[in-house]
Amino acid sequence: MPLPARLVLALVLASALSGVHADDDALARARALARDAVIVDTHIDAPGMLAHAWADLGEAAPDREFDWPRAREGGLDVAFMSIYTSAREDREGKARQSAHAQIDAVEALVHRHPDRFAILTSPRDVERLRAGGRVLLPMGMENAAPIGDDLSLVRVFFDRGIRYITLAHSAANRVADSSYGVERRWNGLSPFGRELVAEMNRLGIMVDVSHVSDAAAAEAIALSRVPVIASHSAFRHFTPGFERNISDELAKAIAARGGVVQVPFGTAFVNPQAASDLQAKYRARAALDARNAAAAAEGRALEDARAFEEAWDRDHPTPRTPLSAVLDQIDHGVRLLGIDHVGLGSDFDGVGGELADGLRSVADFPNLVAGLQARGYSDADIRKILGGNLLRVWAEVEAGATAR
Ligand SMILES: [Zn+2]
Image (cartoon, protein in one colour):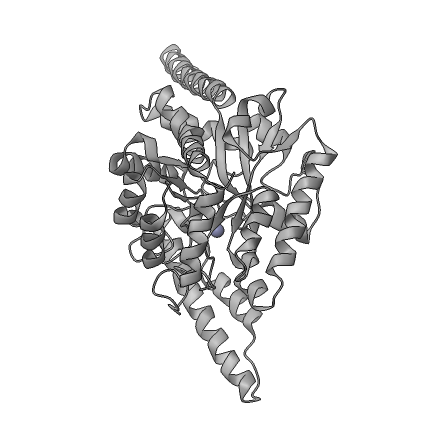
C-alpha cells in the first residue's frame, strides 16, 4: 500500500479509536453515577409475569427485563413492583385474589433472597436497606379493582405494603374512568373514587393518575391534600390525541402541587405511530367486546377476539424507537415543569419487550444517564430525575398521612 494511503488509514483508525475511547469514558462516567445515585423505577410488571410463568428473579432470568443481577448492573435501587389486575379480572371477580397472590410472590422473592431484596414501605428506609447491595421492592397497585367497593380494604393493602394505587386501568371501574375506555361512566371520579382518594391521603398511599381519563386525573389532582404522581406516563405533547399520555396542562397541575411525572420507556408511549396504533387497537377491541356482549345476550355466535388481536398485531408492526425519544420526553418534562417534577417509570416486563433501543432491561439505566450527561444535565439534576424527585414526593405523602 502506498505511504499516503497507509497514513490516511492510520489517521482514520486513530480517530475511530479515540471515538471509541470517548464513548467508553462517557459510559464509565454514566455507570459511576448510576451506581452511586438512588435510582427509583416506579413501574415494573414483574409480579404479573411471575403469576403466569415462575422464575427466580434473585438469579439471572434472561427472558425477563427485571432480575437482581441486572438491577445491580444498572444501578437500580428502588424497583416498584406493579400489582396489576386487568379490567377483565375485575369483571370476573378475580382482581382481589390476583392482587394478594402477586404480593405473596414479591414476599417470596424477599424470603428466598433476604440478602438481595427487601420490601420497602417508607422512603426513610432506603439508605439503611440498600446497604450491601439489596434491591428494594416497594409495591404499587395498578388498578384499584382489588379494593372493590370496600374502603376498609385500603388499609388491608397498605398493611401488605401497597404505597401507590393507579385509580383505574384499561376500562372504567368503580373508582374512575380510563383513558383507553370508550365508556365514560363517571365523567371523572366516582363518589367512591373521591372517598378512596381521601382514604389514600389519610394512610399515606400515593395517588397515581396514570391510565385514567383527563377528567379523572384533574379531579384527583385537585382533591388530593398531598402531591400526586403519574407512575408511568409519557407526555402527550409528542403523541397528540393519545389520552393515555399526560397533557401538558395536567402535568403542570401535578407539578404545581409538588408531584412528579414518571416517564416510561415503552415504544407505545414514546413513539407517535405506536401510540396512535395502540389507541386505535383499544377502541377496536372495545367495539368488538360490545358486539360480542350483544351477540351473547341474543344467543348469536361470537367473533374471535384472539384472531382479531393477532391480525391487528400483524398489520401494525412496532416501529423501532431510539433512546433519544425517551431523552426528548425528559427534556420536554424538564422544560415544562422544572427539574423537580420528572422521574422514571419504565414499564419493564409490561410491554411485551416493545421498548426504546438501549433501554431493554434494568441493566440499561447507565445508557439513559449517559444520554442525559451528553445533553448537558448536571449530575445533581440527573440524581433528581433518577429518583430524588420521587422519594421527595413519597416522603411528603407519608408526612401528610394522618392515620398513624
Ligand atoms: Zn400500565
